[in-house]
Amino acid sequence: MRLRTLLVHADTDERLPQRLALSVSIAREHQARLVVLYVLKAPMSLSLYGEPMGAPAADLIQQEMNAEQGRAEELRRSVDGQLSAAGVPWEWRSVQGITSEQVAATGGSADLIVMGQPQESVAPVAQVALSAGRPVLCVPHAGNFATAGRRVLVAWHGTREAARALHDALPFLLRADYVSLFTAGDGTEDDTRIDDAQRQLISHGVKAELRRATLKDIDAGTAILNAVADSASDLLVMGAYGHSRLRELVFGGATRTILRSMPVPTLISH
Image (cartoon, rainbow, N blue to C red; front, side, top):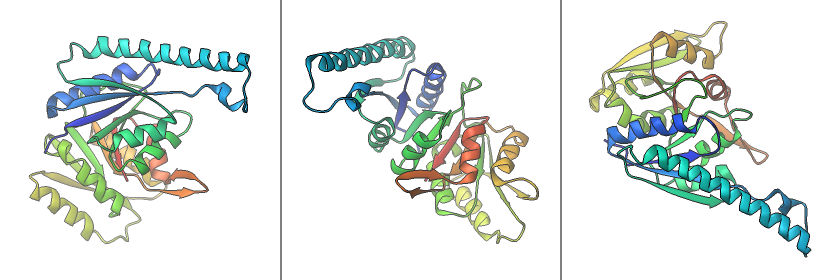
């Protein structure tokens, strides 16, 4: 089982080269191609003027559009400089619109969407993860990650989202040197489902070690982060619980904790 197409969200974040480097590493291992997507921002002036617009307003909007096109072209040249010698097929795309909507729409035909760790708000990643129908690999702000997936921790909770993440992560799990299937609860849960999950992995040829933790004075998100550190994992896999509330896509508490404090690349599925 291989990944064939990776969609990489490109922006002006200084961490983009690290995100691209990890994507190249994954693409090489899976003989995949990269689609690098930049979403052109709409001119701010569009929200300031109604119709009809006078010549000065139209000129200002055109100046903003030209500046954004210039930023996109500069970024494309930078990406080309990094990927031209990488030895993997890739293409550049630029579209205009709302970033999360465009990444989700384009990423729907990819095997994996690669994004940066959200900073001010988890909303853009939430929008993509909950609507694209594809797994999202978030790359942390800090640290260099030449590879991901040699040692994998799968956070299991017996939910639909966890089952989806387990299946979406199989291309990584099949190549991992070590896989830990981790669950945390209050000690009263029925463990049958995690045993079934382990058997499912074994049926695919994945040897997974079971790790259980009982929550006491910490929340589930913190327990997962502790387990990642204890197992020296370089990839975390988890289901992203979320829902729509008053037109906002909202993540559950554990997912928010992970996205804000992730120490390693994290694959999330909904």
